[in-house]
Image (cartoon, rainbow, N blue to C red; front, side):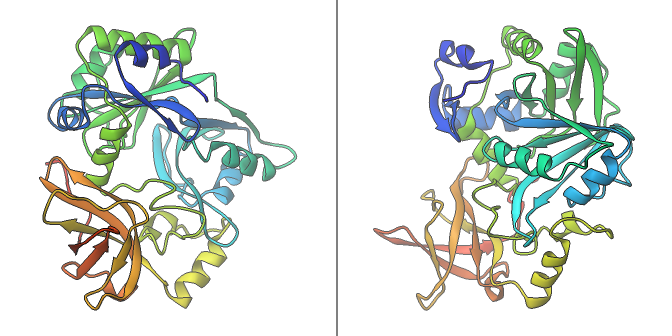
Length: 357
């Protein structure tokens, strides 16, 4: 099983560790609820060094990446980043990713941990014979996320930088350990926050410094409840090679007017009509649905399947996501979730469930 540079620190902090896509990762430290509320109300940090990134450079980098991903990179300014998808030829989602633009011929694509080996192979398979080079940053660069309403002051103190003018989905670079680090105004929690990329030795030093200053860590458990409240998809749950951005209700991230891998198939699938549609749902009580639970309509007929479900600590009741028949994807529609031993009532609800004010 793989370990991040921060693994020993997690053990020393008493984290409960789990296998997450082949990585030994902390699921919680002092409790999911405490870590969730700390992120919503104050500040918390997350080890995200299991994620991977590819550096893409050369005069042909923009054309190469533009064909590979769904987001519009030609309109992306230097110092900005954009969310989108890596699609198969049939329009299925290989991964969701964020692409960063440094200058016209230097880019970085940040991908998910579990899909990273396949993503790397896909990037390499479509690499042109000349004009573009790419480097897998696994083992070279690490990453931590600092999230929450008080994250700005923590990161400013850490980096010695004024971040007050940073816009959402923008980034700045800074020198660290003889290399270049990146601080990005992005995150996976629905809160004001930052993602910090640096050489692995620098990431360890940053983590230890933040601990010394009283910034407490949060694990994968809180990360999941936070992202679900914010209506953010998780690859392998809401997104997979078996679904397209159309079914996921995320065509806005694949709407550029130029050719890219999967575009023709995506258009054909949209024309043919969706067989299912991703929706949010809410449950009145605390008992939650889980990935794979069957979704039934008011007559008891099978109409879909749950992708994610959890008690929402900020909201005080259970929420989730599911793929259902498109005609049922209307807020307020009554559903039943089959938990096996019992069935519980749910209603389709708009996402995000939580939005930071």
